[in-house]
Length: 325
Image (tube, rainbow, N blue to C red; front, top):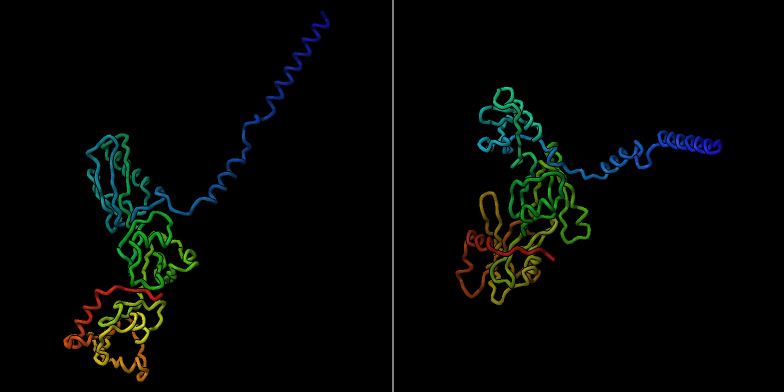
C-alpha cells in the first residue's frame, strides 16, 4: 500500500510539474512580437510608389458621384467648382477640396446628421472623373488631350493613351511637372535604339507631355518618290540630299523651272532654283529650312511650271512623310 501511495504521489507531482511547465512556456505556434512589424516593413519597402484610389484627393474640376445607401433618389453627380465646392440636395454647398473620397463621405454624413435629416446615413462618394489626377499630352501625337492617370505610369504608356506619335514627331519630348512647371525635362524619343527603354521615364499625375515636331522638307513634282522627309535630330538637309531622298529626278523634269517655296512671316515666298546647275555642281547646294518645298515641274505640261506657291503648298500638304533611314 505504501508503495502504491508513493507511486500515485510521485505521479501527481510529475503532472503538476508538467502543467507548470506549460503555463510558463510560450505556445510554440505563437509568433514573437517583432515578426509582424518586420514583415510589414519589408512589404512596405517593396510596394510600388503609385497612388492608390484611397489616397486620391478631390480637386477643382473633378466629377463626383454621391449616393446614400438605401435611398436611390439621393444619388447625384456633382462637379467640383473652382473653389473646391459641390452643391447637394438638402445640404446646399459642401467644401470637399483636398479631401479623400472617404473623408468627403464622412463630412456629408455629419452634415446630414447635424441637420436632423438622418440618424445614421451611409454616404458613398465615387470619383468618376479626376482633373487633378490626369496628364496632358500635346504636340505631335495622334490624339492630343487630357488623360486620367491614377498613380505612377511610364512615358510610353502616356503616349500610347494618346494614340502614339505622328509621322512628324521630333526626336524628344518635354515633360513638365505641375509643382515645377518652369523646369521641363527633355527626354529623347529613340524608338529604334537599344537604349529606348532607358528613356521610358516615370510620369506623375498633373504632368504635361509635349512631343516635339521634327523639321520636314518636301519634294514634289516630277521626282520618283514625292513626299516629306524628316530632318532627324535637327540635322540639316541640302537640295541635293532632298532630291536623293526622293529617289532622284523623274523622267521629264523641267529643271530650270524648278523653285523653292519657303514659308515666311509674310506668307510663302518663291525662290528660283537652278536645279540643273546644282546637279552639275555649277551652283552651290542650298541648305534647306524646315517646311521648305522643292517643286520640280514636268516638262510635258507648260502650265505645271506656272503653278503658284499656294498651289504647291496644297500639293505638299497631302504628301506622305518619310523618315530618313
